[in-house]
Amino acid sequence: MITKVVSGMVLIGLLFFSACGKQA
Image (cartoon, rainbow, N blue to C red; front, side, top):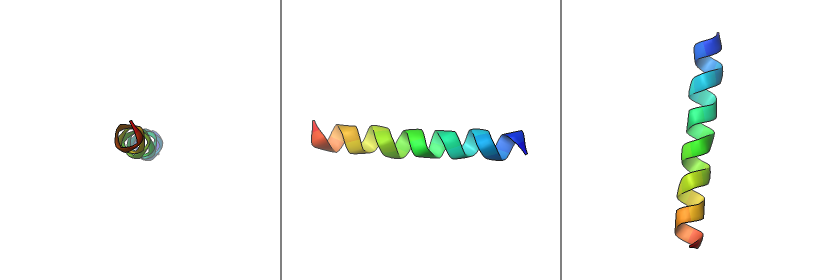
């Protein structure tokens, strides 16, 4: 169950990082 939370946070982090990279 903890693995799902970690994977979810990593996925959101990746999307957020990608969005910031595109805006910059």
